[in-house]
Image (cartoon, rainbow, N blue to C red):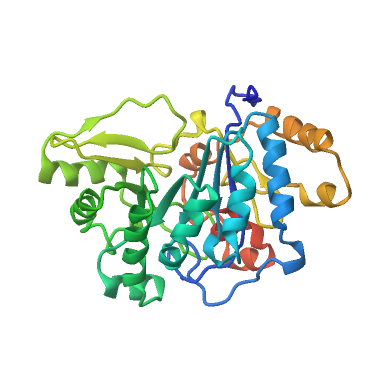
Length: 342
C-alpha cells in the first residue's frame, strides 16, 4: 500500500467518497427536500470504467478506503458491476456503501458477492408516519427489510446513520439504540449539518453531541468514551452493558484536524471538503486522455496545498444559517448536499 500524501496540515489522503449519482428516491428534509432539482447532465456522469480508473489513481497516492454514495447509489443501474471492478484492486482494503435502504433487500446478495465489504443504512426514525412526513415516502418497511437483508447476507460492521433533528426524532434516541442492539448494528447519530441550503437549516433545529449524551445517560447511566486512533468522523461510546454507538458532531465539535477524506461527485468534480466552495474537474483531463501519472500529479498538487477546515470555520460565523441560498443551489447543483455525497 502506497504511503498517503499529506496536506498542508499533515492530514493524509486515505479515504475517498464517490457519488455514483446525484438522484435519490427520497426527499429528506436534511438533504434534498425540494420536489424538483437541477440534475447533472447524464452525459457528464462518469462511466464505471472512468470511476474504477480514478479509484486506481487515488489508490496510487495512498487511498485505501472507498465509500460509494449518491444521491442514492442503488439507483445507479447495475451497481454490483462497479463494486466488482473496484474490489479487484487489492490496494482498496475497505469498500463500503451508504444507502437509504429502499432498494437494498433486492441487491444485497449481488453486492456482497461482488466484493462490497460494508454497508451503512440511513435510518432516521422507527415510525413510518414520521418517514412519510419527513422524507415523503411510505416505504419505511422497505428500509427495515434492507437492514435485515444486509445482516442476512453477511455484511460486517453494519451501521445505521440517524440525523438528529429537534422536534422530529430527538425523542427516538433510546429506541434507535435498542433497534441497533436487536439487529447487531451500531447506531451513529449525526448532528444536523448546514451544508447546502434547500434544507433551510437553522441552529435551533440541531441537537448537540452533549445533549444526545445527556439524554442517553439518563436512560442508561454512565457512558464511556472509547479511544479511537482512526480518522473516522464518529466519536464512539460504550453503554454500561457494552453496547457501542457513535456520534458525528460536525456542527458543534468538528473533526477537521483529523479529516483524511475527499469526495468525487458523479460528474468527476473532486472536492477537498464537504463545505468547499469549488472543486477540481477530474473528468475533463480523464476524457482528454491524461495518463495516470498526470492525474496523480493533479491529486498531489491539490491535496498537498489543502488547508480546508470548513466545519471549524463555520463555528466562527456569528449569524449562522444554511451555507447557500436556495437560488444559488439551482444555479450550481454542485453546492447541494446530495450532489456532494453527504
